[in-house]
Length: 175
Image (cartoon, rainbow, N blue to C red):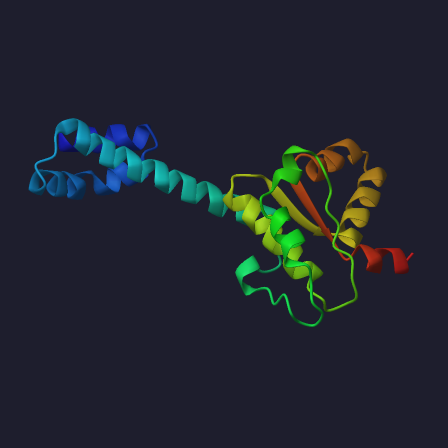
């Protein structure tokens, strides 16, 4: 019976339940939980685990060069930045409204940090994100024209809910 249960859990792709059902059963027994409460505990863990795996997959697929968060951003350095406006972006409503925020400022003021942090936050909220540089985007699109894969390449850059394009000014200056 135990092996059958494990086999079924694997077939149903419930890895956390597979790993934890015995331990959670012991906890449920100690707390005198009903079968439904036990099952509820197991399912809550499975859902939380799936959500965490989905977030980690989205972060990996986003291709951030490094992870930055809003918590680590210095709003006072090197120049005071309007914190209220930045925080408003982090509610992510602009994604649903299909708006495009743009960070403009001199080199070193934190544009990339904020852009990565915004993308990271979007991943945590379940959005599909892609981080790229403008030069990388242009190079991929140009290369796709040569091998007739332009539409497929364009789809890769337009399918995510949020595309973060960094170093736009560098691309414009390198023309």
